[in-house]
Length: 87
Image (cartoon, rainbow, N blue to C red; front, side, top):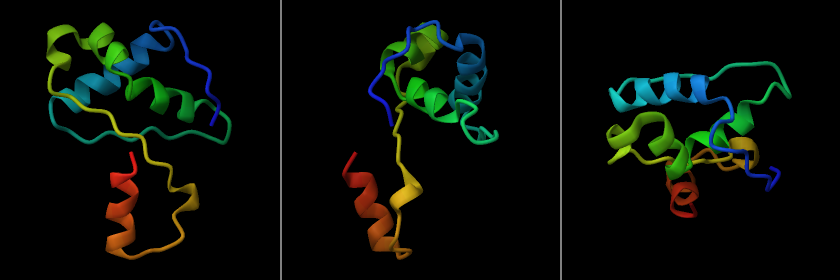
């Protein structure tokens, strides 16, 4: 993944809609064809400053964790949890 950091306003309307759902404790999926920007959105959503920009005080207590399953080669529960502890 590139190390480029997008501005706070990058896809702000979409980020706010997704974060509103997350703040209510509901599930959300971001689906799109290859190279449509899903990774950029995911990287945007895990940023604390973006969550604060989109949600204000409601962002307190929300965490963002980005896990790349592309190289998830070991399909056992222990490997799955180890991947999260690397974050």
